[in-house]
Image (cartoon, rainbow, N blue to C red; front, side, top):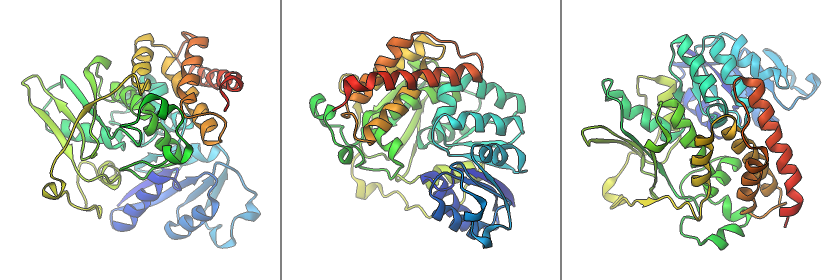
Length: 384
């Protein structure tokens, strides 16, 4: 029996992780869980899984917690993340909270010698060097939950120490894969949230439409697999069957395939190195018929160009990219800016702030705050 803390249990990854716990009750027990503002769902989760600790990062008075749920320790606010990540004894911690808050949670879990299952992009995007140093110190690999990074991680299991020469990071292309630049710029909220293959949260779905999601994944892959950015290639693959691939020096390419189902990479991280049933449908290649591939278009999707510039610039550039994108996506979802305004705001923040240090967590959080401040300043000029 393995114990698990789930940070972000009410989100897309968290709810699917709980489905897998329920599927394998003899293998996993939830000891801590945190939610954000979906309190009714969270209450039901606590009622079902009966953790030792529960908390909402958007605090509520204890009198609003149902009486039948007061059997466990409750922690409110940001402190809930720290307690769940580091104070409650657990074999593993699934960090699936959205945003830069995940960086502190990952560091807290690593400093407490926990096995981290990483579903939060921002931790590596903003603090990759700090996170990987902490993971090396405790001698435990970060287990990626992103489908693409999980695929690469799985491909490398049979590498016997052979270093890959290239990582092929696949992308669905999102809902705007075939749209022209002007149409993309003026896309509506509803259009951007209509992902063709994956069911995800709103923020990551918007990032998929702009391909900032893939930009962030390039940064993650750079740190997770210690690869030079120029050796990471984005391959647009509309069917989302090949989740990523690895090329070796002898020309061999190993890929991981499967139907688009996040339960597979979540379960692999939870049970690593074992594989357990997930309830996912088997892949039927005959029904599929064919797989297609395209190059990423940096003109229609500037995020693919911007990320290269940030990686080359170093310092806190990737943190600025991430913070500005988060703020810009929030503005788009709130109806304040056109879809194309997201890229304009990110580029504006990078241009205004220039190089900034990223030697510690304080530097990173400062750069993130500055990026958001600049986006707020630039918003009036870009509003609809």
